Amino acid sequence: MGHQVPVTEELHDYMLAHGMPLDEIATELRAETEKLGNPAGMLTTADQAGLLTTLTRLIGARRAVEIGTFTGFSALAISRGLPDDGELICLDVSDEWTSIGRKYWERAGVAGKIDLRIGDAHESVAKLDGSFDLAFVDADKDWYVKYFETVLPLIRPNGLLLFDNTLAGGRVIDADGPADRKEFNAHVAADGRVDVVMLGIGDGLTLVRKK
Image (cartoon, rainbow, N blue to C red):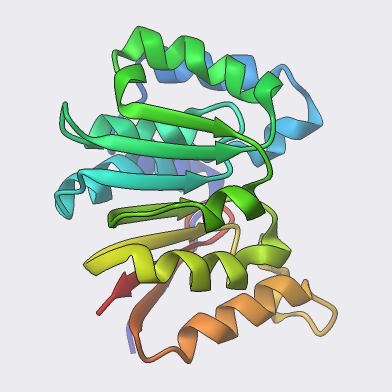
């Protein structure tokens, strides 16, 4: 049997220091988001940002969609992995929170790749068309199964769907753990159209490869 290394806070800091570092723009975006207080808990972690950029580059993604943009930190990471003529469609309900991200997208030189669409994501997702290489979902968790079923047909073979917060702080294994995450995790694990890997990064990140 392999040995699972317990990730202490110190070890996590070491991993961050020896991975893809956040530049000044990303660091300042995180700092401004953290000033929001409790809502900052929705912020994608720094190590997830590095992974998002790397995965986007690895699969040669040119067109991506993000459902749930918040203050734009994850969108910054994904867009940096896209080529100059790439496109990231961001769906979010809040003009206030996404306006924070717009400033940093401009500074990073990626604003031209990002198509931000403000409105009810349930309706916006249904209006998506064309083919996508990558999807990142970090919105209302009780819609994860519906987002998966709606977006999967739009993903090209060998494309990726990424779902955040799928471990729910570790509570998915509790008898009274969140039913929405349990339902989603079971749903994709049993779906023969995809390969699934759950990563213990951040609050749990599920990688779904379309066959």
